[in-house]
Amino acid sequence: MAAVSKVLIVGGGIGGLVAARALRLQGIEADLIEKEPRWTVYGVGIIQPNNFLRAMDRIGLAQPCLDLGGAFESWRIHDAQGHVLADPPGTRAAAPHLPPNNGITRPKLHDVLVKGAQDVGVAIRLGTTVADMHDDGAGVNVSFSDATTGRYDLVVGYEGVFSPTRHRLFGDAYVPKFTGQGVWRYNFARPAEMDNGMVFFGPDTKVGLVPLSPTLMYMFIVTAEKDGTWYEGPDIAMEMQARLKGYGGLVERLKQDIVDPAGVVYRPMMNMLVSEPWYKGRIMLAGDAAHTTTPHLAQGAAMAVEDAVLLAELLGAHGTLESAQQEFMQRRFDRVKYVVDCSTQLATWEMEEWRGIHNPDADQGGLLHRATTALMAGY
Ligand SMILES: Cc1cc2nc3c(=O)[nH]c(=O)nc-3n(C[C@H](O)[C@H](O)[C@H](O)COP(=O)(O)OP(=O)(O)OC[C@H]3O[C@@H](n4cnc5c(N)ncnc54)[C@H](O)[C@@H]3O)c2cc1C
Image (cartoon, rainbow, N blue to C red; front, side, top):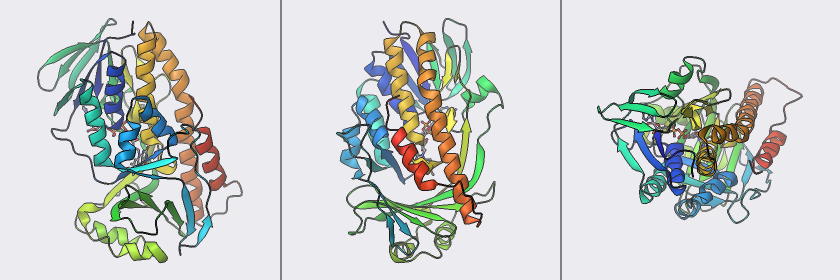
């Protein structure tokens, strides 16, 4: 018999929706609440490396992502003018039957996840959040914002980087920290010559082009930004264009087409890691609520999804909640810490280089290769 029979997932993002489906596949009842009254996912893309696809495959959702996305082998590295510097191979060591990478638009991924949850009977309530909850040792009594109540064996806070459940468990002990960089993204028609992921290193920025389907791709540009800076509104397309100064070739040609302010998405980069364990009694955290990373390894959502699939499998296999939670932490903490630490190191070296600081220890290519290889291992 499973360690729990009824779980509340708070937050209908990538990790929460996967967790709810994975629990149902273990025969565990799953309710999911999302604070937004309507689904509001913004329209750029997510990169799914091979280990992300492996986790999705364990709950039967890798193929739908591949059907709606743009699989690609690897990242071809260029200078700012578009000359190829390196063409390292991708890896499918986590799941040899799946491609090394898949790019998918956030709305299409969302459709796969919502359908995946609904198909197995997850009860989803939009426009609802937790008003209060109390763990009495045998269960958690939850009052919802719509004045209803429920009792659960386990509550999992999957509310992302500014998680109220984290605050409830740990107060102000964990505050996401701005890392000094921001990322700008914009979707384009995919040019005929694009047959792979592409990265371009400029003197003080980095650009990437990511396949999203046979006909669509997105551009990201990583820039140094001041803490507290936020960009939106009518000038944001011009702001993104201005940051592409100094690039030639394909990037220069694409720059002219960044014209729709509503299509530009800017996000500051943050990191944070909650020390283990990520739970107190029957209330726990997972995904970005427990660990937020910069996207240098494209592993944030991958870690949220791995958390979700493993947690459900352990809750299904263990006789008690406590032993399932203990094994969960043993198998998740070091792996997630590695992602946060490597991503932070890559960001630090990148920014040193942009400022003209020569760091003899900096080895971005080596660390990227080692980390990508290490993350393909089982966990
Ligand atoms: C610029 C950028 C690029 C990225 N690129 C990649 C990538 O290519 N590949 C990758 O793997 N990862 C990437 N990530 C990381 C990835 O987006 C996150 O790691 C992932 O979305 C985390 O999933 P989550 O479910 O934990 O949280 P989220 O997806 O943030 O979902 C949280 C959900 O909880 C809801 N919520 C919040 N508060 C409450 C509440 N009180 N009650 C109910 N609901 C609530 C929110 O509305 C939201 O729907 C990127 C991140 C950024 C910022």
